[in-house]
Image (cartoon, one colour):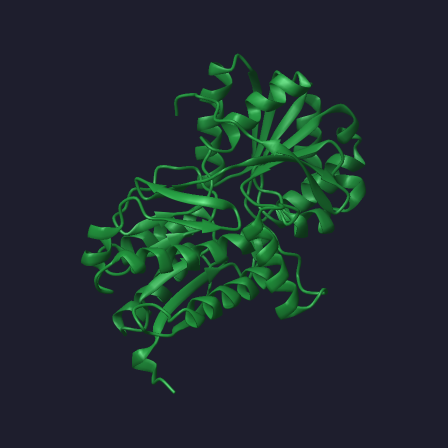
Length: 359
């Protein structure tokens, strides 16, 4: 039995409240599964991994204070997890030069803080090739955008504007709502009234669910396609099958993905938690990815010191449920797929090819 000082302590920052709280149960379950697998292979530098769940759904400054307090008490060796970009922006300066931080969410791009490693998709991987695919396969050339009013949607919208110009697409209007809105009657009608062929949804969790319901109730799904880089199985279930028709999603992971790694993860997940466990989804799988990334990073490092890890971190790679993950400039490249919502699951239509566009 190891004492507390022998543990390798990982802060798992996931939203336990707010619009993204819908992801928390599956994120926590999968991270625990990943920690067990790491420990079964000897842990990190011979130390057993112990996870502490921290609420990433609290205000960003509060999350940063919580992590700082644990750092000052020498109770954290690494941070990982899925949470919104506002939280990442608050955490990055806290952990800089102290401990590694594997940020697992898809995000707007541009994070270069030393010691922060991003495993999620960026607009270059997701939005650009999806816009090209939807133009080429469905003839969609006119767009509007609806997004939560914070860092990720605003930054992704800026990238989308560039991609639309390069692909000769029209982005007619951008509509933003407060993060955590509970009334989508006006934005849903505004989207429909634009007359665009499709809407780019940059809404998180429950916000996207409420928009989907209102949009479908007003007949929007019969007039326009929807595309989202952030839509997963829990959100489909909460939206209802009748509210997700004509919806397309780009992501590096779906629970219907049939790679060897994805099938193994699904098998382990069901065996550990049962068939009634929260649906395995991209946000949860990203937390699994975060633990694998930490294992790979420390596996290359001579010691657990942050300086040694940064020196050895270049070109780290590993195999994951998403397939091969290869790091470039502290970001992991990966294959991204386009899928369509089909009831409470996704039909994967194929892998997206890089659009060859400039950021």
